[in-house]
Amino acid sequence: MDLTFKLWCPRCGFRGSAGEYHPWCPRCRGPLEGEDLPPPRPILGEGGTPLVEFHSGAYAKLEYLNPSGSFKDRGVGYSLWIARRLGYKCAVVDSSGNTGLSTAVYSAYLGLEARIYVPASAAPGKKSLIRAVGARLIETRTRDEARIMAEREADECFHIAHPTSALFLEGMKTAGTELAGHAEGADIFVPTSSGSLLIGINRGLREAGVGGYRLIAVQSKNAYSLKGRVPELASIGGDQASLLDALLLRNPARLEELARAVLETGGGVVAVGDEAAVAGFREAHAKGLLAEPSSAAALAAFLSLKEKLEARRAILVLTGSSLKYVGLIENIISRRKL
Image (cartoon, rainbow, N blue to C red; front, top):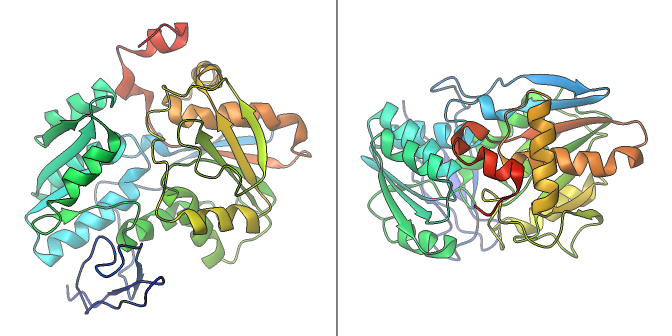
């Protein structure tokens, strides 16, 4: 397939050549946009996740049923499909766990060598699965150190760069497209760190001509990037958020667009700490929804606002699977120190 897409930077005006990939703007390091990108197509069956009613007027979008157990498969699958066609032999990513596992899984399927940098604090189950599919796992002291080390390999390998990549964001738009028939008049609760999922949902819905929804970002109190930028609808669950290990980015590259998407839809943010995350985790599992703590935080946020939603329909995006936390689930539920 002849790839004729072009990447460009809205910040400084950089424009790349046809079929040339950059993980971020080579001139100013800003996030990139794409034009003439081929439409996403399933690689391992990602996307098309169910929307199920779990409470009167409240629905869950089960993103944890994607092949690697998280919504990241939408962006990673699309990105690595393009990478193979561009002739890359290896892929590299820095991750708190879910993007790393997704990259490992799709690299294994597509025949790419995968190098995954994660902080030592990443969930043990995610790290074990990354190793199980044959990826090279490199643990670092912090999330920032993982980013720095992965970026050093960006010249050699295809860097997923999910906070800045135009390809990753293109894959994320499919989540919005799938919600097009359900979103009007709804409050959509989205666990938010880099913001790619919330932005992707918003772009997908706008391109489908859908309006009348409100985007409610659900953030960890340890990485509360929207604080002071959008209305705070609630702050719940104490000051610490160690359980929200998939929501770690404090300064997302697309923060301005993230805040704008929330504001333009009349939404807001809910800041979540560990006590609320545990309550959301318990409630999710009591309903048969196997969501990891970072995505169960969306349920905690919904419960905190349920009386204020003016009988609007609610959609909770449950982003990752708790099956990656086997061995830690009892500790989470009992609130013992992990």
